[in-house]
Amino acid sequence: MLLALRANQTMVEILCLMLEYNIIENNDTQLQIISTLESTQVGFSMYEQLCDRQRELRELQRKGGPTRLTLPSKSTDADLARLLSSGSFGNLENLSLAFTNVTSACAEQLIKLPSLKQLNLWSTQFGDAGLRLLSEHLACLQVLNLCETPVTDAGLLALSSMKSLCSLNMNSTKLSADTYEDLKAKLPNLKEVDVRYTEAW
Image (cartoon, rainbow, N blue to C red; front, top):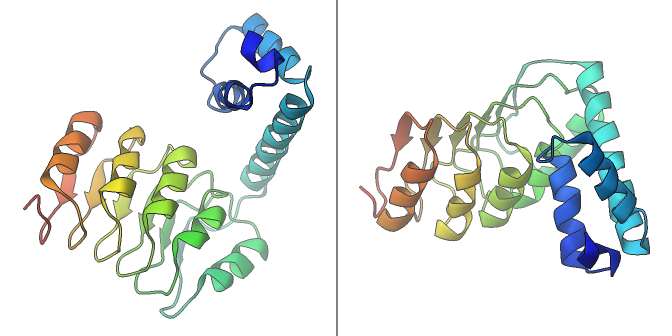
């Protein structure tokens, strides 16, 4: 907190993340962190953005909507963005983008789906940058299909923070044996894994 008070941006970001992921349970400590953030311009700005994100998530959850959705093949990032902005998808649990033209850019839309548990990205151009963003925001994701996507170890390693994952398809990706062992060690709930046609097979 002292470093954050001196406008150290890295420390400000860490404090914001601690609030966002509810790492601090003590209410007094939470209030101290908020007070620290509000004491500097950079901290105030980041805390304001955090509050905005949380308000948006609560609004999405309140509105409800469908629980399952499959996009037609040839759909693009822009199509997904248009669709998700056209209605309420706060209850969406299962989303299939298989065989569409989406890329990592659509991750910006996917992280706005707080209830998402199953995501199918089979045979898309979704890559490492998208995986890193998903791993930071979709902690509840349980099933992820990355078959025939251009993901590499750099992105796949980020999945180690997604402790809810119980099914992971990495068939025909650039997964290495070392990364596979690392994921197995760090994802205790992982029960179904497909690593065919990878170095880990």
